[in-house]
Image (cartoon, rainbow over all chains, first blue to last red; front, side, top):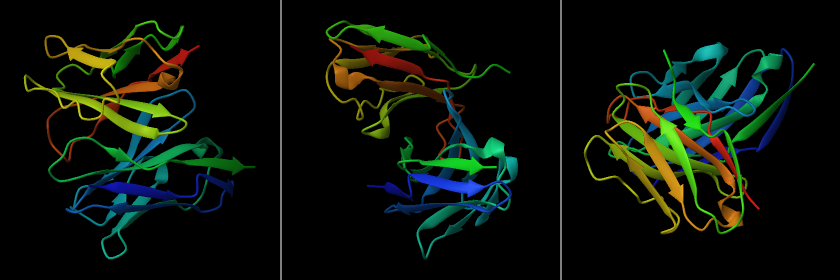
Length: 113
Length: 115
């Protein structure tokens, strides 16, 4: 079985400040990990994904995430928050032999001017 | 190119009625997924279609839920005798192949409200 835990259902950051969203996973096999973003009343959009090629993954909109096997983590960061980053972010895991995505509970980001 | 589309975008129904939700995947994508997003349960997998293989129905919450995919393209999710707890956003996603490294592309969802 696999599971994903996102610490903090809400995060508030100031414009220009670091964005750090935490994701820890549990998987019995080497996982594939994804971060998706959801803007209000829209579907999910892929930010980035880890597929074992490199532990530091760069995605769209200036986001990146680092896979740390020893910590079973895949935290998402962005050096400088922009107002347009206000959205909900979901971490997801996919087992090597499976197909469905298992999602974390999501973290809603508020960006203050 | 065109993304995944879903219809209707919003649906309000009365408890006990049946509803049908439609998903048009990206052309050429062989895999199609349905997920449900609700306040209490977060994002959860419902059902998965891959080509002509038997669907993975392991996520369907009850026998009131069913789905089909005709001609390997359009999919319809049917909820019979709707209950208030069925109120949620139903998301469809498609994928080009049955590969774990592939990306699932999501539609905008259908927001279902059961009164």
